[in-house]
Amino acid sequence: MQTPQTEQTPGTLMQSLYETDFYAWTQEQAKLLHHQQWSHLDLPNLIEEIESLGKQQRAELRNRLKVLIGHLLKWEYQPKQRSRTWLMTIRVQRRDTQELLEENPSLKPYLEEALQKIYESGRDLATGETNLPLKTFPENGSYTLEEIFRNGFYPGEPAADEVME
Image (cartoon, rainbow, N blue to C red; front, side, top):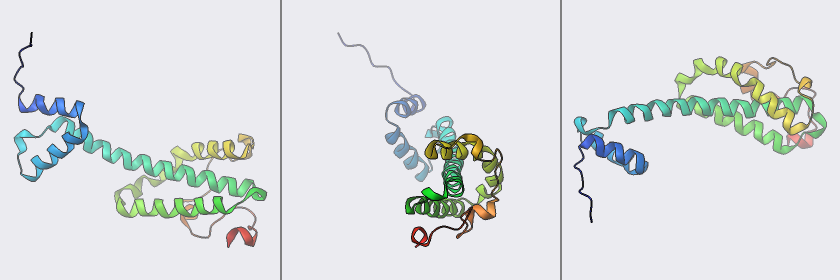
């Protein structure tokens, strides 16, 4: 025996699509926006997704800063272990973070707050990857934003030429 199908309004159909096939839902929302069919948009979910996109950009900024700070700490506090890999990670994270900020200039005022939030995570990363005790690294960030982003800033004693070339 078949169960009768219930009619769905455009709103409930969109909610169902949102829950079962997110990609299809995004394509449908884009089509509706393109054709200016405002009354058919799934506004609650569309608002939620747009807000989520902004949060993702902030999270990406924090993650890049965490990796960058962790590697700067490793560089400074474990000079005998320095490698081209560490150097390249620092360079790539600097470049990618600066690119993220160029593409999202409204994140720049958030930089100082982000730096405060993630320093401890960068410290944890450095501890985990060096096996040095956590107390080896300063409790509070010792690098300024200017230093963190300055090409050529590598804290601690100068590196051996073969690592830098």
